[in-house]
Length: 383
Image 1 (cartoon, rainbow, N blue to C red):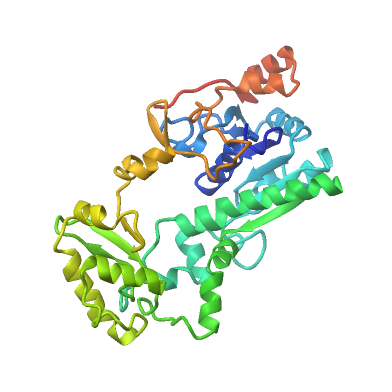
Image 2 (image 1 turned 120 degrees about the horizontal axis):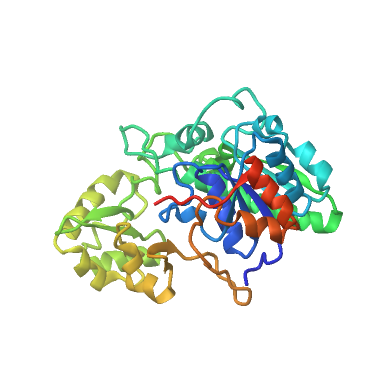
């Protein structure tokens, strides 16, 4: 049983960062109920919707007054609720924080948006790339003289969004245990991304980080923190920042120690990168892995999504788990006593409507009436 066993959470289903937050809470043992729209979205209920795991699904028509009343009845018994709609949407549905907190004064009401709940851009449409652009993160990523490169949607949606909301909700739950009062969490992906950039803002203000992309120790300029192509067209990574690890990298690759003696002389970085590129091209990725993996050169092969689950280290740690024929990243982090579990994959939309309502105190006749009026609906499958 995970460390959040006994915590009850309502997830207003959306896309991307909201499901990640809910998955993290569910992986840690919280009972998270997905409030799906009848029919779901493009991912809901599909076996490949890995972010939908470990939760039960109830399909509710939020435009039906009895559907809204059903959610409010669940709110009365919940510890937390999370939503990721534009500011004002939940209020228009009749499920805004004031209404929900009036039904449950201890409720932690988590709200996630790109720009935040207020400010001049609060109502603007946007996506991860826009949020990390405003946070200063996107500008820092890319090659020298080139354009900014989107780092997938890891920084805004998932790092600055889903993970920050999960952290905020756990903080709110801990505080509510002391105060007896709930509160609203305003999680902005811009602000979460800016926090993730905290070290770089510090380095910039200390004169240790240049605004020009590809000119800094960690952005691809240095030879000792970079990726290199191997003889078979694959890639390896090195991150030998500390002097003792750098010395190991130089020694184990057979590089000229005299040429590589001034590690932090940025003027020499282009020449040293070119030399390491030449060296790494002399062997295959697997040959370099056999030589350097597990040592102190700060080395790892660059693995694809298909390869990573099968690496011996990930296999030994059971870092990936197969459920219903789908490979999932295992719940993380790990706990010595209250072990998180991956109980099941994503459930079809509405698969658990009857069970959830019964478990949360609805009588059979009430459930039947809600289904008859269309306020809630039962399972719908999606391949």
